[in-house]
Amino acid sequence: MKPPLGAFVVDTRTDRVGIVMGHQGPYVQLRPYGGGKEWDADPRAVRQATPAERLRAATAYANARSRGEVP
Image (cartoon, rainbow, N blue to C red; front, side, top):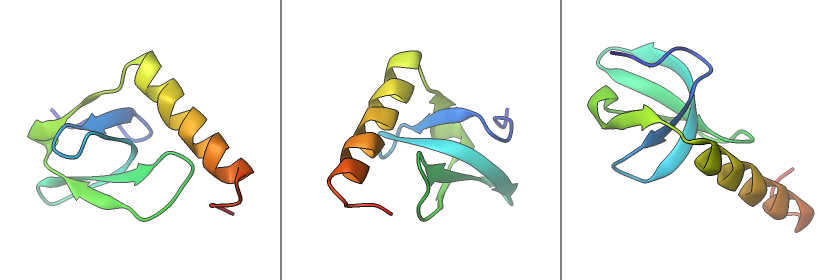
């Protein structure tokens, strides 16, 4: 089953949290929390992110932004 657009998921092959941006061919297109370059993930390797994983991604983004590492 393909995750819905806007869902927060974990790509288990890279252990990255992403937001589902689309479905292209056999892949799920994910974008990192806070923006950035999209990547393609195998839908069989994607699972719903837990609240703790979502919070960790949001905290990492906020910390990087406060250090000036992201616009």
